[in-house]
Image: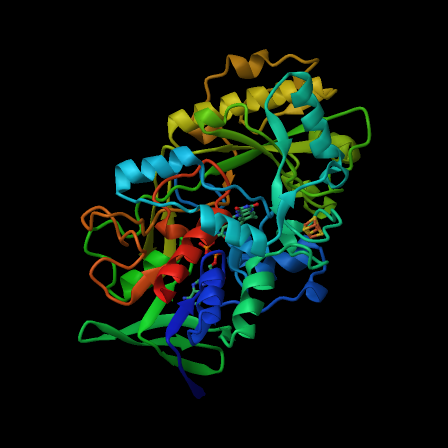
Length: 478
Ligand SMILES: Cc1cc2nc3c(=O)[nH]c(=O)nc-3n(C[C@H](O)[C@H](O)[C@H](O)COP(=O)(O)OP(=O)(O)OC[C@H]3O[C@@H](n4cnc5c(N)ncnc54)[C@H](O)[C@@H]3O)c2cc1C
Ligand code: SF4
């Protein structure tokens, strides 16, 4: 067993949407940066585009983390250089202004993030998806929404040279997706940062109220990073456990609580024409007609290997749907949740507790009703909504979903955007980190990841997380 010792000004734990930019910007500002990442480095050449190869490599626990609650919700996380951005869809939204207003009012956070939004969008190449890359699946939804006069458009994404291969969630094989490990970590390293992969941070050594060292373990031994500043960016599900084990951020009793997850679900349409939903950018179109009520419709699609598992129904019905795979379309509904969950550690294992709120189940119903109308306006012959007990919708008839009373346990949901478990706020009694992301009462210990985001956003969070991390870097380097 070996022991490696690094000396740095700052130790950053995690290389996702929060850790990677703060590491890069601090390194470029002249700080000596040591980065610890539990996962490995995955280069585009090693991405096979096959879900069964890539899920175990790129996802934590093979993508099988799930909530305990009603209903259970799968909550996948990336693990590797780039964190969850390695497997994300690349959709980019700035924090909505009404959310920033709410943070000011409810959490005492005075944030003007415009400069940071510009900085990160420029760095990761954010631009609108061209219709030619959007894929027929999404273009049909756009056509249907336009026919109904609904507000819809092509999404902004962080990709350069995307060819629409349709496998963003399994690692971009062309290197087009500008994920955190593709953009920020090389920038950090060019500026002198050291990235230690396969290194799980375990302990922060604090002496006389100051951070002295971070200890990590690898398969071959241990690492000690001597640094007086530590930035924890392990993600909203893992940061609370790390802080708790180190007795940091526990004073308010809020650590691990206030978890929002932005639950998502997807409906399926069968058309008469060939759609080949796996061709094109998987998430390329949005419908924000109901965004004011916290309901967003965004594209979702995956390669055919995934087909059997994500195809609903059983027996002969399932077979018929599989036979119609080339004529099928899928699209997602995401709900800005009112429920809040919690992440805890039980016998050393992470347990995520979350119950979908009945109001959010009703929002899913409304989102799917709108989506079914859009599918039919686009020419769908039948629509299957992932609500248990609801019949297949045919002939443009959305009545069954219009009059349904939907309970949480009927919704088949997943979630991709955990936030809020070490929330930022001015009041140490109700938050874990202060408005500058320093853990209340713990000088030199900062958090820069989804856990500091104090409320549900209603949109995909990576730009918010990166902008908050960039703001922290600017403040520390000033
Ligand atoms: C399939 C999918 C699609 C998504 N699509 C989008 C999208 O289109 N747009 C969008 O905005 N968001 C999307 N997201 C969400 C987005 O990617 C995440 O919200 C974001 O990456 C979270 O950033 P983070 O820094 O909080 O954590 P992460 O990006 O998860 O990074 C945390 C990193 O810390 C590492 N780590 C954890 N513990 C330790 C430890 N003890 N020691 C060392 N390292 C550790 C982890 O291995 C991981 O690499 C998607 C998510 C998923 C799963
Ligand atoms: S759709 Fe574009 S960004 Fe996504 S994996 Fe394919 S080439 Fe990469």
